[in-house]
Length: 293
Image (cartoon, rainbow, N blue to C red):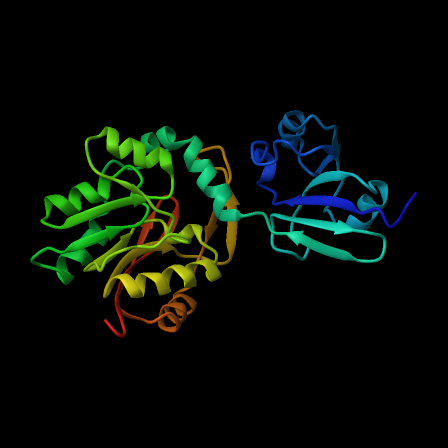
């Protein structure tokens, strides 16, 4: 056995059994998992499934068995941010890359846009829209990030606001255009926002960003508008879930103090913060003002 020939391990979170599309094209020798449900993933990758009797703790043994091969490990916490790709040459581990969590989440929406439309509440988010109304009683120019199906934009316009609808998911952009409204494809992480606008509106969008990604987006927002209205999930840590869409999406959960701290760090002052509760858990509804705005 050539110990210098690296073993390549694709580490997926426990919800990673639905990652077949994202790993298409990988030549996978074995899928290791604790759950029999990973059989579907193994079948889609054309690899045998090896069930592990307990917690995945000895990645070294797996690496030693698979020099020069790629294997998938559906794992609990193994000390690195999941999902990730790691290699071992016989001397040490190296993290080759963290799989682009945002790209995976966008791919889930791209493939399941119609399912998303049929599962979300039909009513717009009145609590968040009310914050915009209070801040701009005469109406304003709104940039909406992550318009999705366009339900909030339609209500904002009904109340006298002018809305630029955008989404990073082409399927949602085409859905809105088919409904007879203008919409632009815009990735909040990588694209220019244009402007200036009176307010940026983002309902259930920021919860898909890691803290570092959200910091980037918040700084971009502060350059494009003096006001920001958004919702995000309340809780601890981050989770991958295939709930509703049956494809993995990343959700980052926040406590109030760290969220306020990040807003301050990126140039925002919180004007209003309200809590709400839905079947999916607790939510923050926030109106913030750019410090220099």
